[in-house]
Length: 321
Image (cartoon, rainbow, N blue to C red):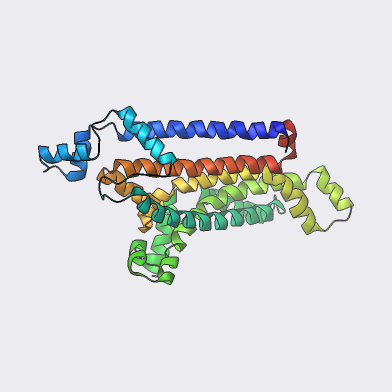
């Protein structure tokens, strides 16, 4: 890895760190637009007395300047201390770690299904470009890609939960009272919904870039050398088509992670999305800020990983750097 390439990676890391700082400032500012007394009322209820409000504000140190509270929050965040929830009184990290681990498992299963399925379908269609099979499957992918996540989720819910009765109506109940198998089953429909969101976009791009690679000169040269068709398809054509595909995969995974909010609510899945909705609804400022920053850090890590993998896969970009 040469010096220019390292410099380019360092530049992108710096840009992402600046983005994280901006996100933290905007998030803190938006969550602290309310006066401390209003935050106290949203947590304690409208029937709260003046003394209780003053006690709440003083106990949670909401009467200090906003800049002081922001610097303390961001400093603690960098040390891994997320503070205590003003609603539950428990450490924020306890709830976030449990919910985030479930959401990451869910996103991992969905990404594995969506990316693998999308690539296989795209390569399959690239070899049949212009045929009736290509036309029918591409049309189906376009229809699927045009559907919002909540519509796909509702369709799966109606068929597999209401009609067939194969899955629980509320995943949260399975996590609270079910055994290991019941909790494992709760991942199926949410992950399938996200996978169906990812698959059509990845398949369409994989089809185009693989078809271009199969029609290129180096693939023709490989055929003239008598190489096996499977080796030509995966080692030559797909390897060169993988670089633009990585960017599309990372963008779609980021999109799918943001869709976790809807998926959690629809299936009653006790993930980080449902925790964020609950925190906003209860006025839990510190939990809301921490969850949004967790989302921002995860998305940043995905973008950085995609940048590095793209540079590694693309000789043209490495030379340009």
